[in-house]
Picture 1 (cartoon, rainbow, N blue to C red):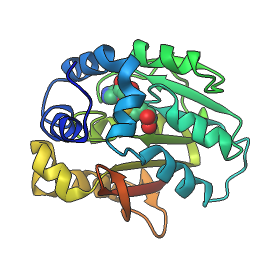
Picture 2: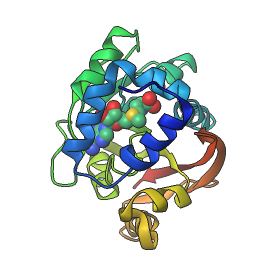
Picture 3: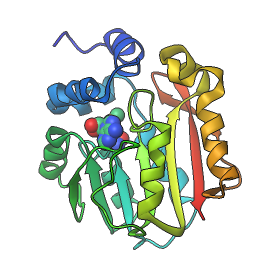
Picture 4: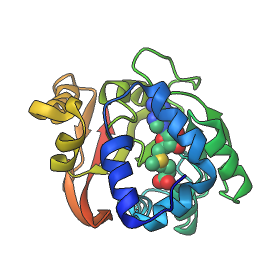
Length: 225
Ligand SMILES: C[S@@+](CC[C@H](N)C(=O)[O-])C[C@H]1O[C@@H](n2cnc3c(N)ncnc32)[C@H](O)[C@@H]1O
């Protein structure tokens, strides 16, 4: 791999990582960079995990809520949640190499689940298992498709929370065709109209500064019906 500089990461994230591609190809990128992932986060000023953990903490849910960290990667986000007092977190990711790093880094997860979140694949988790499901960095363009959020809704209990942070809408449109014509926002709203979930006040999105590469991010929280 080339030297990890800010410019290299900016080009890699916007022109490769977030660009249109099949999920299989995306997961290969993570397989090949798992051992470098946290260094890449540092260089690219990645703060998704910190921001989402703090926003989630402000909802003041019980610290023993059963949480699914969806796209847990090497456990950066899980470690933030644990620092904030959350004790009951499972990790799910399609990339075994990333989860192996999480296991080796004292991420304090109770269970590790290797599974792909895709619209047409049933997650290997019973329905209504979790109080909360969160995505830090895994809801980004070319990662978990918005239509696949239905799979996440299935495993969260009625009244439970689904939350995530994603690049600001303008960046998403520039990087990935699936975000054109407000398709992302329209699908989130479709789920509201289908009475699958309700927006949590103050989000959807809440724009936050300095999320990644000095750009803002958008934070979302919905309550499952
Ligand atoms: C940017 S990393 C975020 C990791 C961690 N949440 C963090 O904040 O550092 C995205 C993770 O999502 C996983 N991922 C991407 N698409 C996925 C999918 N469709 N199903 C499951 N995991 C996926 C990748 O393997 C990767 O570990």
